[in-house]
Amino acid sequence: MTRLEIVGLADVHGDVRAVRKVGPDLRSAHAILLIGDMTHFGRKKEAAAVVDAVAAFNPRILAVPGNCDHPEVSQYLADRGVSLDGRRMIVDGVGFVGVGGSLPCPGGATPNEIGEQQFAQALEDAAGPLPPGMPMILVSHQPPYDTKVDAVIHGRHVGSTSVRQFIRDRQPLLCFTGHIHEGRGIDTIGVCQVINPGPLREGRYAWAMVGQTAAGPTVMGCEIRTI
Image 1 (tube, one colour):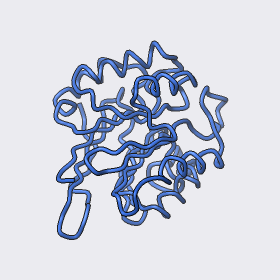
Image 2 (cartoon, rainbow, N blue to C red):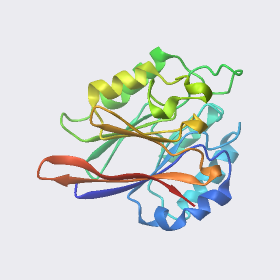
Image 3 (spheres, rainbow, N blue to C red):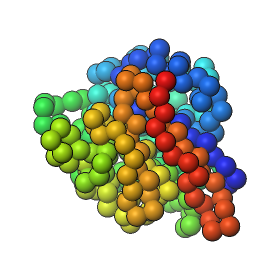
C-alpha cells in the first residue's frame, strides 16, 4: 500500500443527480464506498441506477445495502461483483469488510433490518479470513453505539453494540457509516476514525486518504466534504 484515496457516499436515497455532482472526487478515488440506503425503499432497478451513476465516473465500487433497500438489492450487489455485505475485498493491500442493514427502527419496520447477533456474525464472516496484520477498513450502514455518529435528536444513542465491539477488537483504520442522518460527524474508537458524512442527498460525502508510513499504515486525511 502506498496511498489509497477513498470516497464514501451514504444515504443517497435515489438522488442520482447528487451522485453526479461528486464526479471529480469519484474519478480520482481508488475505492468508492456506497454505505447503504442507495434507494428510498427501492429494489434492484433503483439500486442499479445509483451504481450505474457512480460507475460512469469510476468502476471501483464497494457497497452495502441499507435498511431502506429491499433485500434483493443485496443480491444485485453480489451479482454485480461489488457487494461487501458480510464479505471482504482487498484493494491495494487494504482489507475492506462490510455489513448492511440496520437494527430494528423504532418508528416502524423497514425492509432490511437485522439483530445484534447477525451483525456480529456477518462481521466475523467478513473479517475472519483476512491475513493477520493487514490494514482494514469497515463499511457499516449501522453506526457503532455511543459515538457522535449514532446520536439522534435529544442525544439518544441508537448504534450497534456489535459493530462497536468489532471495532474495539479489530481496530480498523476507518469505519464509514451512515443511517443516522442527524449523526453527521467524525469520532474515534481506539485508533479507528468513524465517519458519518450525513446523507448525500443533503450535499455531503466522506473523503479519506490512507497510506503507509515508517510507523505503519495510517489515516492521512479524513473529512466530510460538500457538493
